[in-house]
Figure 1 (tube, rainbow, N blue to C red):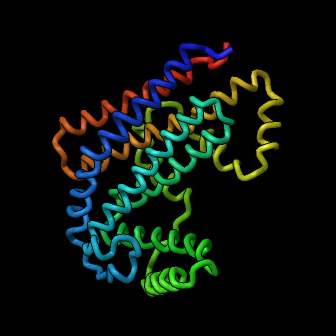
Figure 2: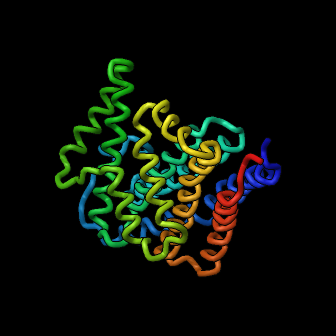
Amino acid sequence: MFNAEYERRIDDLVGQWRDEVYEEVLGTQVMPAVKIYAFASLRDLTDVYDVSAIFPMFSHQMGELPDHYANGVFARLSGACTSICNALQAIRAHMDCHAAVAAARRAHEALWQVFWLCNPAVDAGARMNRLVALNKSEIQEALRFWTGLNPAIEGQLRGFLGNIQGIAGLPQYKPKDGWIEYMEHFESSVDGSMDDAARSWSIMSNMTHANLVFDWIIQSQDDSQDEMDRLQLIPTVDAMGMVGNLCTLIMERAQIPEEHIVEVNATVGRSWVASRELLGLRRRE
């Protein structure tokens, strides 16, 4: 028997995140801040890049590096917010626990990349190289699909990849890099249990084994269903908190007026608080 209060709250949370955060805050408040931050933070960039040779997406429409940097940051932030919404919808729809965890994992991976691109401790040249390195990884992933399927697209992708490989000093990104840098920067201000955050990382890192093994481990414990209900929500809650922290960081770096930052914090914070409250409720009576 499902708890009616829990069901009502998860339904409200899905609508709140979709309507207030994704549909409103991201487009009207955060996206302009990302663009301002991109142009301001790359102003002193001395390295020269051939934009049309290394960025397959929007090379003709967006000819300047700050435009590509802003697009790289915002696309990942927006994608993470979509994944959070997907995780919440999976929970609301009573889907298998793994559906919500998988969606939340995608959100985390995108958010780690956002911070890796925006880390204020890294200079403009290094941040730009990070964007090119992520672009390189995305082209390599695209080639896994297009190789042998469409020779024209494959040839274009290989051309971009060859141009990027000619750039010296590009870092090699590993997902845990972004997570470590994020935690080092926000460790003193992260609200909530660090044990929960560490547990979320452990859960997501170990989802590579068969789901049957994961389920057997969980279901062998007491109150296994309550545990599964909680486990699917923990990484989603963490991802919401990361969105709030990253939006604040970007808006502060862009020197957006304080009242706008407070407004965004309050909007994202409402969803985060509501999701934390769900962790204190049992879904099943």
